[in-house]
Image (cartoon, rainbow, N blue to C red; front, side, top):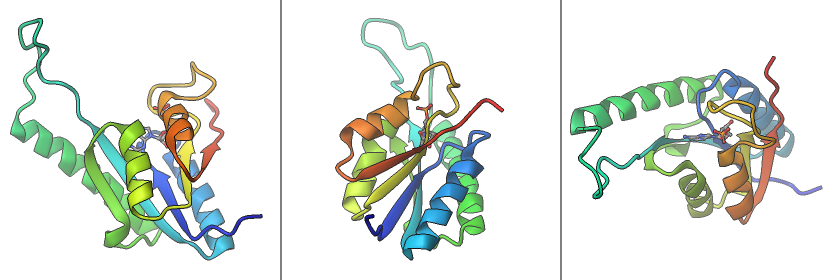
Length: 147
Ligand code: AMP
């Protein structure tokens, strides 16, 4: 069995996040691996050139989103003893940026939940699916159930 050295948790702060974190921590302990955590604040387009701007996302709103995400990441990281250097909260696209952060930091296992805030309608949530398809390292999708 492979011996993981650096495990990255992709956290979305849904109700199931703790389960994903617990699973990642157990694997990190068994492998004596470094544990990191990331959250991507989805960067949605402010305007569509074909239409009038519908939503105005100003700097204050971006700051508020980032601040809230950072607070939640800090709390999860504290409960997992993850150092500040191993926490990333960034704007972007979850599919793309979770994989990028993994690659840039020599992560050899990314842990995601099978589902997130968008519910259990699909066999595999879209982020879990995207990470699974694009990551060059192993990906563990922790099976999450409604209850
Ligand atoms: P979803 O595809 O939204 O059902 O989410 C599946 C899993 O992907 C979640 O359980 C998280 O582990 C991860 N995930 C989803 N969105 C994000 C995000 N914005 N930042 C980090 N991880 C995420």
